[in-house]
Image (cartoon, rainbow over the protein chains, first blue to last red):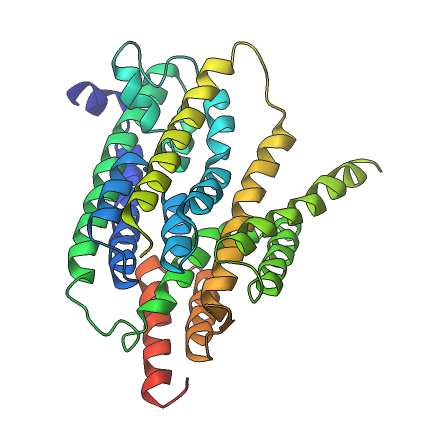
Amino acid sequence: MSSIRRTLEGSVRRDIALTCLAVLFIGLSYGAIAVASGLPLWLPVVQSVFVVAGASEFLFIGIVAAGGNPIAAALAGLGVNARHLAYGLALPPEITGRGWRRFFGTHLMNDETVVFALAQPDYPRKRAAYWLCGLSLFAAWSGGATLGALIGSAVHDTNAFGLDAMFPAVILALIVPSLRDRATLRAAATGAVIALAAAPFLPAGLPVLLALAAVLLLVREHPSREQP
Amino acid sequence: MKDTTLVVAGMATLAAGTYAIRLAGPALRTRMSFPPRATKLLEAAAVILLAALVATTALTEGHGFSGFARPAGVLVGGILAWRKAPFPVIVLAAAATTALLRLLGVP
């Protein structure tokens, strides 16, 4: 850690700390919501340690809590996590570590670590940012989820406190930055309509997967925009 | 909750699959390049899945309508998020709106 302190500028370390604080809050709501929707305490805790990808974990507990098939929920979660393939291709070689460290370094790859690593000007700083951000986010996410789950199990009438509105609100807050892009907004709205139309007829979990058909809007749209 | 074995199997699938996806990028990098357009599509796919989850969890309960209180709270949260309010404010305002509407007798 002392080498990381020497390598990274103060402003970068402060930005990483602020990001961790935000992730801690999301983790708290994640743990609390999971338990409040009737899932056992260990589920968000174990998942936050072994998956470490917030959006997919929210998707998983959302589908399972609604009575959906856990395997369908896992596939939906993997759909959300497919972007990590692109992250791995974009990162400089061996930034995730060599030898045994690679096993853990790979596990730390997520939206924030990749953004912080790529923003650094040279390799030593990229590597330092990746590991500092990765390790602190891992602690913030799993710690937040555990604490949230403990708090959530103390609340009994969750609907009276409006906790059921927290879950969609959290996810909405997470995707709003992406929705500022018009094409993405249109595709996301179409996907939402597809899922809602299917919800009365299909078992829980499947309507969300069906929404993926809206990706076609983007596949079709982009080439025509590039041609003048 | 459905039976625990199936849930654990789902969790294991998600954890192992996510790890494999994370491992694949650095391993494939020397052999292939990933077009930026494909990266954008992957990100958009994630947003679409999550938007669909927001819509179904906000508006449905089982196979029916969830009532008005919950989507109203989510809408308030969404507006605050669009206006770049801090995360805790967004989440607490959503919960408070729904709780208040229920207190007033809105389903």
